[in-house]
Image 1 (cartoon, rainbow, N blue to C red):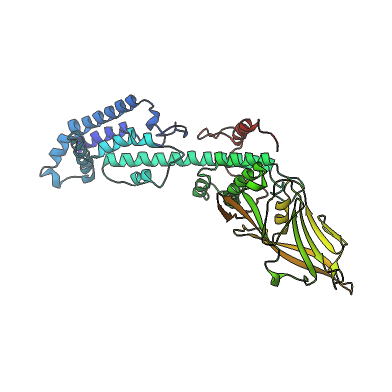
Image 2: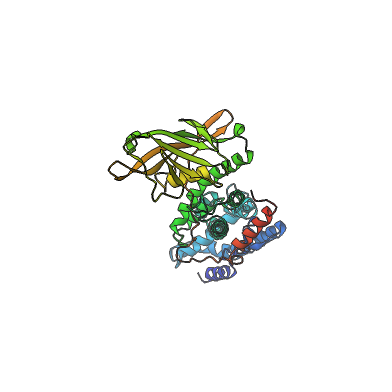
Length: 452
């Protein structure tokens, strides 16, 4: 077996069709991957031809005579290493099949993968569970195994690139959100309000950066120790962005007759859940001083004042109490009026009074108004009134409810414990742009936009 072992040692030293760890190290996702960073098609063909010719020489000129000899009795029954003999017999057969152009031969499949399949790979649409994954799991002879090894190296590199790009994209979203919107109403119960311009910028940066973001981060959640709050934020944004996009379109029209968003108001949808309301004579919601009838529609644009007024019977046992009132509640007997001004009046009414603060409302928001009342015994009680406000979107002749989303107050850090992502510069592995670079690009793209 000495001669075959020497051929095999030479084979192992030369490592034909090398598939070491650096196979795709030159790929950063900008273009399709290049095997061993060989950029020119002719250079790749030359490489494949030289690899084939060298391996053919080792197999047919050197190993084949030895394999034939060792396959004859009495040598066949006294072999020390049957595995080595089988390996070279298989390689010789694969070369014969390739030269005979046998359909499905493994060398042609390997060459097709390197020269054709890699041309179709795009990092933005790369599916680590798709065709490449199937190829990476294919077994077979030496050449099929090499193709599988290349596919595995491709998946590994793509995973790294996708994660780095996703991390950079998330950091860009986080940087903009936390600097421009965090804790500003409606993204928090603050006097400071988000501008329409910044919301448009949020939509633009999210559209630019959010492709496959959640799925890539979920695939790396354990390995990269992703902060679980990140996924709550992204899920809320997936629902919030379409809502905001519709709202921006609505307020830019500023024409009540052609408005695409309205609010249907039910003034007393759940009387059984109310308290101390028997003396409440009238409920009146006004938008820009126009009364909205029960089960009627209100059209609200940014900066429209909104008032919710409750009127008690003048000689009732209870009447509104005017001490220690919330800042937006005013009592002038027999009325108690909640007023909401500023850019987001209707939003403030809903956000400040919705019954459950942490959930999305798919079919209308239940809001609760608490008014302190005093009875004839000077007992201070609380009247609790419930309304239902349903935002609706008009699409042609159709009107459908809009889900009222959750407005996150801030964008959480990607890693709960600091993680492994640097916010400055490009990532070392792939050259993905940093959040600062992405934000600068966004600012340059929108620098001509004026404030609302």
